[in-house]
Figure (tube, rainbow, N blue to C red):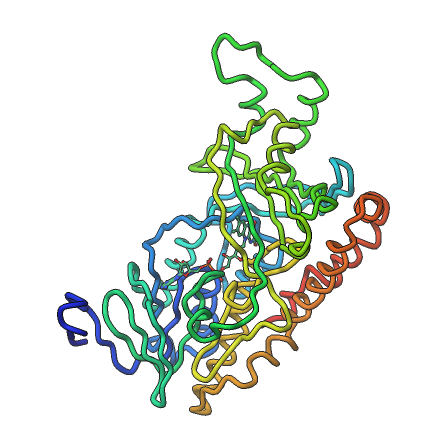
Amino acid sequence: MTSVTLKPGRVPTLKYSEMDRGIIIIGGGPSGLSTALHLQRIAPHLTHRILILEKERYPRFKLCAGGLTVDAEIILEHLRLDVGEVPHVFANDIHFDFESKGLSIRIPKQHVLRVIRRDEFDNWLAEKARSRGIEIREGISVKNIIPNQNGVTIETDQGIFHAQAIVGADGSNGITRHTIFPNAPLYTARVLEVITPEYNVIARGTKPDEPISIFNKDTRNDMQSREMAAYFDFFPVPNNIAGYVWDFPTQIKGEAMRCWGIYDTNLLAGEKRPQLKEPLAKEMSRLGFDLNDYEIKGHPIRWFSPENQMSAAKVLLVGDAVGADPIFGEGISIALGYGAIAARELSESFQRGEFSFRRYKRRVMGSALGQTLIARWIIAYIVYPLKWRWFQILLWRFLKPIVILIAWVFVLNWSRRIR
Ligand SMILES: Cc1cc2nc3c(=O)[nH]c(=O)nc-3n(C[C@H](O)[C@H](O)[C@H](O)COP(=O)(O)OP(=O)(O)OC[C@H]3O[C@@H](n4cnc5c(N)ncnc54)[C@H](O)[C@@H]3O)c2cc1C
């Protein structure tokens, strides 16, 4: 490695001028780390040619509710990783409601959702990648990407890197997609998230002289029964919010907490759109929480559409850079799944010595991941635009067998068919 100085006077010291890296992965979230781990597994001889550039330092904050579906767990098992090592809580049942009533799903003797914190999960995954010989450089922010005849030049705040091919794993707002496809259509959801104490802390009252319970018996019972459950309530849909309010159990540094939020695909964006805060505040207040007491954070989620571009010559996209699940904004299992497919594409491209990635989109769309994403995209276009109250009540309260069948066949369990 040699040091260079670029544009003297403007860029003071550049640490790296890295020639001839095989693959540079931009972003060390689940999609980037999964791509590296899968590639290491199927083509171990390429391990020393992989470099991940991550702009933050682990354990870094990532706004996310941290709900891991069974598919995320299956992909991690395929990688021989035990996600049980990461601090977590379980949701033993999951509710899909409209105005607090709807259907619930429970799997006998098994959790339905494992909830992790992303700082801990991503840090753990990065450590696993490092322990398998994958190099990750933290604190390096990619600023520009220039594909050329010999490969790709990557300009960062720490210097210039060159690679034969790059993987854009830099999330919903990533530089890779912005640079390579500046005019691509945007399908982006708006999302807000809030962390609060557990129900019982609120029910107990926070001041010593407060009565043991400041809520009536029905509210207390409701609170107790919700503790181990994850809730999705679609009540904002008739008000042009094409999404739901969620309420999950979670933990922070071992302390039981709740994670709340609201997701809006923006599918009804052409119509009058109310503020996202209002319905979230309404649902929290129903359960004894005042939204104004907590810090609200927001981040967009780019969701999958069959229109989305996924590759250009020498450049592959994975994870949110391509698109997450449009119905729920679920993206961790999806990011892990993209990693498995991108690794196959990369391994074959290295064998051929050819990096057009022309067939990558076909490979994604034809895979079990592509099939679930297409199914979810179709379902999102049915469930949200049919926004009438009566339809939402019918769907979530009366069509339970149909909803569960569709979820089981088209939405979940796709990862078993990914290797
Ligand atoms: C509020 C909220 C709640 C969510 N809840 C859930 C949930 O419960 N379950 C679920 O499955 N999904 C959830 N998601 C979606 C999930 O967080 C994403 O789908 C997932 O993080 C995508 O992973 P990724 O690796 O593609 O991108 P990211 O996790 O965003 O990782 C991208 C990485 O790239 C790095 N990076 C970005 N730019 C650069 C650069 N220029 N140079 C170098 N590095 C860079 C970032 O620092 C980051 O580490 C939620 C999202 C939000 C916003």
